[in-house]
Image (cartoon, rainbow, N blue to C red; front, side):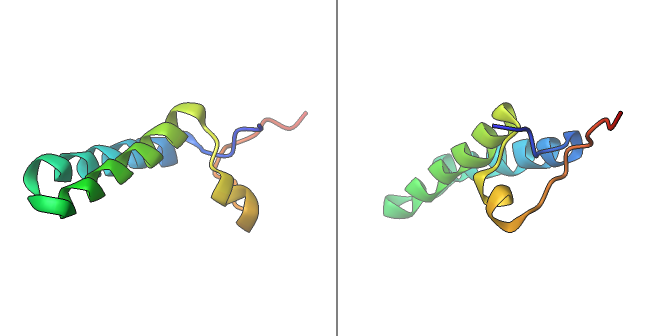
Amino acid sequence: MKANIGSTDRAIRIVIGITLLSLYFFLEGGARWIGLVGFVPILTSFISFCPLYTLIGVNTCKVNTQ
């Protein structure tokens, strides 16, 4: 897996992930499980790889070319 998530993208994903996870504690009933979707952006930010970016050809990671 080649990294395709840059530092700005990583920070945004962590904020979005934490926000989604907080929904688990604020929503009631069956809707609260939607908050667990927050694990996806957090996981992709920690491994610096997004499979969806690979499919659509996006790369926000700055690569050193020599």
